[in-house]
Length: 110
Image (cartoon, rainbow, N blue to C red):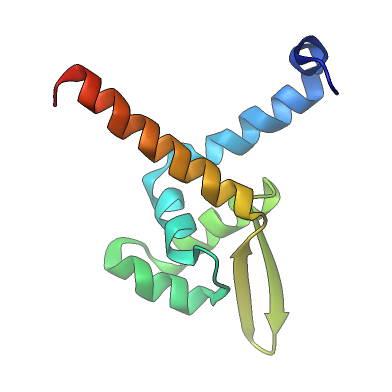
């Protein structure tokens, strides 16, 4: 899709992008992405990085949703499940959004 109009009119891709972006509407899921960064971590390691903020069942629900939306991938090794961010571009996008927020705050005079 070379042309921006083709992208705009490609409804299924727009729907996929909207579903994907919905992942980032929850602060716990944003913290999961930040905790993972470029690393691969077990569920227990992710929970340790998040602290007592989330229970294991709650964390598992977030991880499943993020995996279903292609944000995370996982692999099983013995009894442990390890997660990682599917693409480094997703981390870059989060960083760009954060920088945009900082710029917007400067413009508002905060």
